[in-house]
Amino acid sequence: MLKRDKNEKKLLDVDASMQGTLMFKDPVNLRINGNFEGKLDTKGSLTIGENASIRADINGDEIIISGKLTGNIVASNSLKVLSSAHIVGDITTPRLSVETGAVIHGKCQMLTGAGLKGNILNIEELARYLEVEVSNILEWANSGKIPAFKEGNDWKFERPKIEEWIAKEKTK
Image: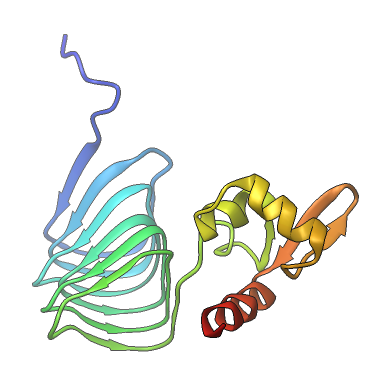
């Protein structure tokens, strides 16, 4: 009987031509080196190899691209675009790294995990986004220093208004 570490991620290395939908509910290290057409919905790490040619919309946690991709990308943790990558599609991720030489044709939005689902943040999400204590956000909201509104007893924050507020604060 093989014992596996509970934290050990499963590794799947695909070097073939495939079509369809690949969906993973559990974290996996997926590396695609061949051709794929369809939809990729992954948990864990997804690597698109240098020789890969992908035509798919991708949803994943951590994504690394070094091949050709035509499709939109939503990375909930991070996206790393290596120098050999060629992407045609829109990108949404909280953290983006692009090496010199990479080609991207599309729009890029850098949003936190909550922002990937919508433009309304709660106080904890905004504190993480701004990298400050919740108590600071609460103080700013109560004093009117930050754009906010109440939903019941909870403060809520609209991302576009927060972005404008950040820009204004930087110029002061």
